[in-house]
Image 1 (cartoon, helix red, strand yellow):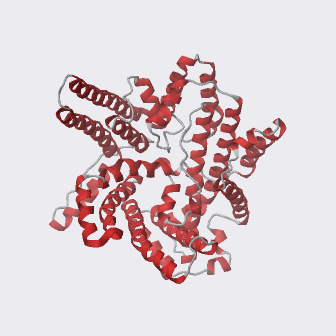
Image 2 (cartoon, rainbow, N blue to C red):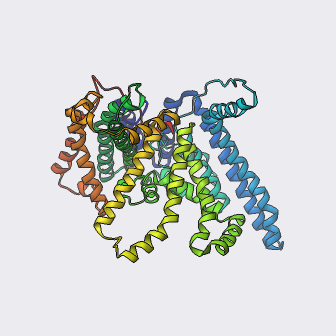
Image 3 (tube, rainbow, N blue to C red):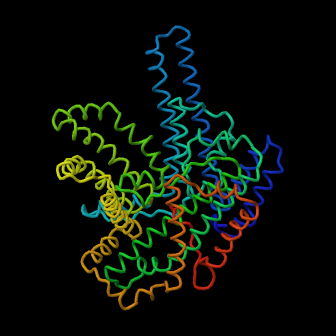
Length: 528
């Protein structure tokens, strides 16, 4: 059981988890969920589950410590201590406890995921100075999902510090919030206030929610197994192979990888949200038709939404609203005017967001480049936007008109495909090599003579992938228009409801990419 898409998970673990939850008394259903979540985590990461337990205990203790200091501050005020003095006396200790909890979690993440990478960078920096000492680091396997529950742990402590939520005195409920099994591998990154109470409530499983959850799970599995796993054959051949390809093939592979990543990741989110729906836990949506975006900034408001929201609330705003940035904004307004002045301080916060975003995705220079790529694109967009608006008004261009919107969408798709090319490359040098070939040796000759069909996908594979993509696109358009698919399907007559479920299941069985010729593909985002 290495993912949500294995037979073990689909036909053994998940049904047994639902059954155990259903038969348990209401007051113990949270314990059933916690037990199955810890079992799932243990099966994924074995003894490294201990790292999660250590993290949960640190977060629990620090949350209670912050709450105790808040109570002490309030007690001092009631006893007559001036508010400013009482707050100042407790704020420093609260910050120390918060910092201790955050540092402890980040240290575990760093040691398991980034230590070897930074040691390699340190060695490369020292070589020009005549120091060439290999730094031996024992291989450490990062627990699956550590990046996700680390951010959730930090958000919990930060929200307790901000007094947005009270500290949880129930260790089991806090642990369940951090390791609920549908979200432990790839998210979504939830806030404590979004799911903790629902996880603990133990609401009974109802037919309507069970159907809606099952339908969403099957839809996610279809995207993953029919499209993403099938496209992996060509993507691996081009990106991981040693052979030279022309620019047309590289562009084609970059487009297919973007589609693969979307279907893989959003498919996993469909499974997670479907399972959450069964247990009456409303996990937040993580995708909102990202390929309809008209700017790179909008794309990241629609793609991996919970990660972007996390960086916005816990990195961007604290930096941009800090005293130093506010002073810088005031100075920049005087020097550059109200239009461009705020972009300077906002740019500092944006740089931090995208540096950390790139680093969060992986320990590699290609990921840091990926973050800086979007930082430059989004900053450039902010600088150019006022000029583009002025020119549009001067030339009488209606920016809300369909042709201009189509142009914006196509332009944004190019930005996305290029970014994913570097993201998928095996290292930054390989990414630069592929991009150079794409730009310098672009050719469609491989498509004209049919040699692209020898890269892992034949006409049958492409036809199946294209047909399924049409279905995904149609559902995406319906969602963009505010129309879901699960609840309307659940309101159909019983024969029609079962026909939809059985039809989707048969679609996966008949057209899924598995068996001879297809290697199992682990969820792509689980490694980040």
